[in-house]
Image 1: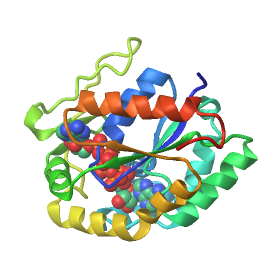
Image 2: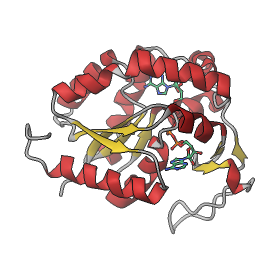
Image 3: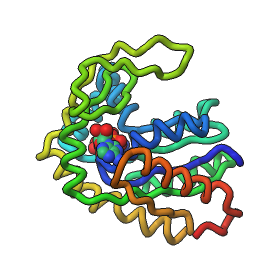
Image 4: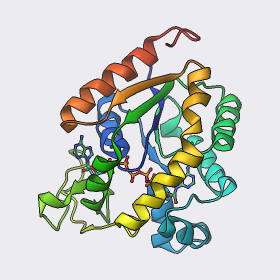
Length: 231
Ligand code: AP5
């Protein structure tokens, strides 16, 4: 089976980042999360980070051109040549159209799009309880109660000593705005990809392991489907 080239689509808190981390390990492809790249830029105080910060903290989308340029550069990196898991991109129809052009230029095609389906009530609970490592971006839950990351990214690096923090956009007020922005700007991508025969839905509720099992089934189905034959 070839390395997957997959988009993970779904509302904030659906579990895209959690599942992408696991799938990246399973399939040996990079997890490319535009939210993580933007947060790194904000922390590093780059020009891009300064432009993006106010949009992110309000739960609004960063302008398409900024994010698309950033993603184009990332997809050109060698580790993304064979496959990738895109988490948080595309988020608007113009971004999806740009992605088609970027992949065409690189002579690659998307295997498909996984849509994570989840109830709004569960989303608010998950997001307000999320904690993230400031060093390796690993995702935890507040119930975990630890303050240090301690995760082994792989066997060649030492245990991560990052500190867990709550994202500035993870308050209930900002999450509600992010959900409205999702409905308005991102939900139209469901039809965009369904019309292209590239969409598979996955139930994102229930234990993380069960969601991973459903997601890998869907990814395997997309990657092995003959081109143009994806339900
Ligand atoms: P981004 O970082 O992409 O945030 P998001 O899409 O809103 O998604 P989240 O990261 O909030 O959720 P997730 O689905 O990854 O859930 P997770 O796995 O963490 O974007 C942030 C901002 O950046 C945007 O608002 C925008 O400003 C900007 N941006 C980014 N990309 C952009 C783009 N392309 N264009 C324009 N602007 C862009 O899980 C959430 C919690 O639930 C965790 O605590 C986790 O432990 C828990 N959890 C996960 N799965 C389960 C489960 N099965 N059961 C119980 N708990 C679970």
